[in-house]
Image (cartoon, rainbow, N blue to C red; front, side, top):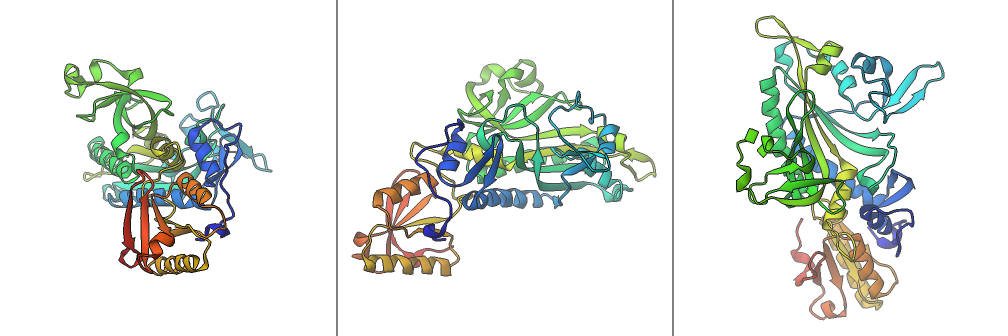
Length: 416
């Protein structure tokens, strides 16, 4: 892509009413547009990052038998009444709407009820289970105060997966597997080293639940963690009974305290929704049983914002290669036609190899080009200048955005 043709532009200053670091940098770099508090549009650069995050998650979920689908955002009242979650006293952050005929609806922020209802059409025998269904869908939450930029919004893209198992034991095997899947996802997203599987107080179906917390100053939570063992606990839930219940001697841990942001959660749901909505199956003996369920959430905007918070520096964003909008940011550091022509040829060569490249072909100063490249944060900056041209027609300089180190090479040696 030619930077001169990209309709977004970088900004020197952030919006005055935007206090979150992730949103400040993403707005300045042209990745997102703030529509209103808690509501952001993803511009071309931002959508490329979001799509790469989505594809990493999709690959990992498919590898363990996940089946992708897409459910509706409009949800009917009857299903939620059956599980006693329609009343605002029970769930108070819905967006409600009414059809012209007076029918009440809500905009989805989760999908346990609708998906359980769907499964009643397809599950009747033990042979139909287990099922691991997931989707990527825009959710809506009527937050009282939207804050933290794209990490907590009123409208956001979420991956939610639900497991439908024959028993608690079958569910727990998948639950444990999903812990590993999530950590693999975070490693691929570049935040694995800063992310901890964290124990916290459980819900209705287990004494403890698990969430995934990434260390960052922008976090809303505080965790106690041990780097050597990877053990972590939400500070609000810290007690001798927890690291004991898991066979851990607390006295042997060198615990550190840090601010963190929750980037994922996994829950056991038990039979609550299957009982309320009549989701049953016949076991090998022909006996009717309720399906045992679990849910697993990941907010894609929250992940994107966390990456920015955790990995950026004073110059701007530093994307991991796995989710960067482009692999290379090509910079031509001269207005001379012979050098500009060489940069154009290199751009065409890279595109011919299907290598993703953002080419800064603008007629602006070298300082502006480097400042914008550092702000946008593509991990590899490819430089063409009078200096490189002296070394050959394919000579290039590669600058590492993260640490500023440079290497010399030839564009012909670059592979996918």
